[in-house]
Length: 482
Ligand SMILES: [Zn+2]
Image (cartoon, rainbow, N blue to C red; front, side, top):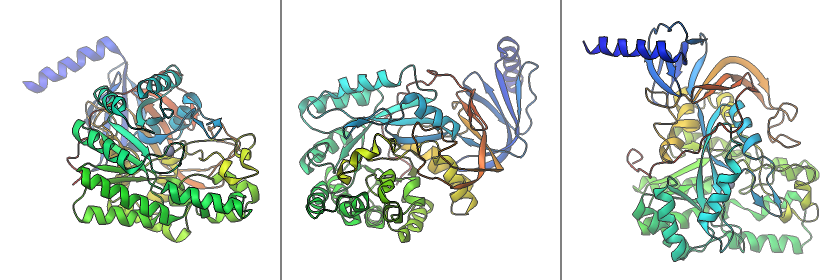
């Protein structure tokens, strides 16, 4: 009886709407399962998963035979149109989200970065203006805190209630964005009390500024000295301190762009004694190493980012960290600057090179080829680290990050046999180089959907400017991570 009612209701909607898409014959992968299934999408949502679903007459049918169907990627760390180091990052919410969509990412979380002394609510408004009308996929915001006072404390509660539960503090960039330990403790106590989550950029800002000063005094001004100014010990120390502060405050901590063993060790130690610390790494730390700084002359500026690329010997350990669950998420920290006209602002001193690389369009593809194909990650682990885990940590789940009835129809259809190669010639990033130039890819998305609409087909953008929606996120839920 129940089934009949459901079936006739379905038939009615099907007759009336005609906006159904049936994805037929693919293999679905989620963070926990894989199964052969047809997927029925009505409007913006997934409404049915089943072994064999018959299409309504007006339905659009996508033949997914031989394809792998994944939840649309969630990149929880981007910087579009960010005023930084005397310039503005090159990709805005239009080019950045187009690149993301073509590369299998359907939701991203960008960082609102207020100015020192400025209102976080005003900064948030400014970010809304940057994104609205431009984004082609859905997005949310994290709130950076470069200061702390009573006003910020009460505004934090407002923004948590308004769908921004995640904050970020910088332990680096002394004299600009850095906050001190007392401020970190204040922020942690607010996040703990009101269902927020604090992320930190873990590098010891005092160590870094000391090293920069002395390197420059010694005439060591080229980009090859950038890693020397950002040693792994400064990241390890900072991670250790942030974890201790979070422990004292009784709050959960998230470490962004974890790049080395020194900080991974701290995360592992904390988890082993029962403290909840979560962390992300980035494709660049998994796949690129610091030899790039030594062999490229000033072109090494292309990879100047903080933290910097590390020694090759540690990269496999980061993959292990992902596999073992100490690192939950892979985000890009996409912050792109053109080599000519932006990166070259640091010709005289590496400390003036705008920090960051383009990566938002490459993340999912790199993780598939170098994670799944190279047998470092299972297909379910791939779904977890590129979509499900960041969606869960940052309050987007189950609307985003999974394939389930009721979830948004954000999907990536992967052809496991399709080959490609990353190059500046075929990048969608609005810059004049690729950080992953020459990387071969095996397995590529053929179709990407955002809320039921196809946004990219074989690396070509076919979506609509401004269709991306701002997503309010739910409060941090630590259940499931312990
Ligand atoms: Zn960042």
